[in-house]
Length: 165
Length: 192
Image 1: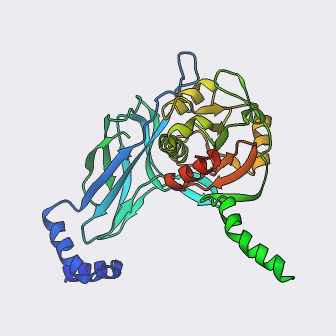
Image 2: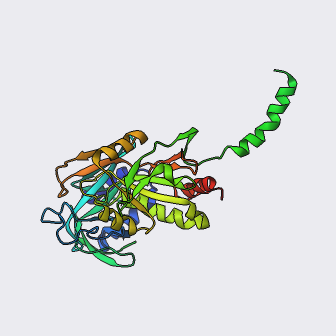
Image 3: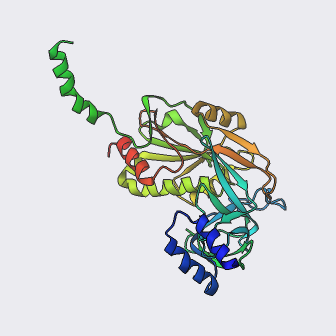
């Protein structure tokens, strides 16, 4: 009965998609991880932007450089989930951010969660959602990789290796 | 209208169609002189817009603390530059800070050089920078935001402004304009 209800609610959420799509998605949820991550990449970034000794790069991190990680998250499970946190040793602080377009003005804001509907995808991309790396601990050079741990509301954490572009 | 004039008008139409460049970005018609300004490059040399005649100048506004919109624009500039081929020598890409408090000339240099060493980061006094923004209709608002470790963020316009070789403001690209479209318009403006 619970499963039936889950399928019905998933069907309602994914009303735009073919019904046949739901059955493999539900089956996959039982045998493999519900959340899959594809197309992950990080933007190249110099760590300290020329902030050498004697600069203001102090404990506040206010003068340190930042970076961004993008990825496409697919929720193959029957229940809605959400990305709620991320971590990486490439930065002092890692946050979830969203860029909002307000009449031609771009406003970046932290978000508490990025929703992942059942059977749906969440696409992080420039000018939208990103994982914000605050205070890079090292340069991000194209060709290198960094490790990022993604934490979800319900699903177990996922560790990804992110290439720098 | 005498029929003779009509015939002349019709005959001229195709020619007029060819003469007016079909920009893919937002074209400013009629083109007007780009507001002049003088800011400092990372070597503390003056960059005066009116001294750039003969070059197409492509301008973006942003800040080095910005991890998303600004590096995206600079990465797109690098792609456009690569696609321009030899015409790239006629194009100057500049990045004007909206955050002079944190963006020292040296930080601007390192930040823009991560994308291309010829990209020029420009800064000035807060009053100079505000005057440039006002002249181009650029908005920048410093915001202290809850829920982030960032001391402050700067909301800002993300459009790209293109000044032609004669110093006229010709095209504005909104954020998200495809690289092919920017390349197309810059090739038109460099006559290539």
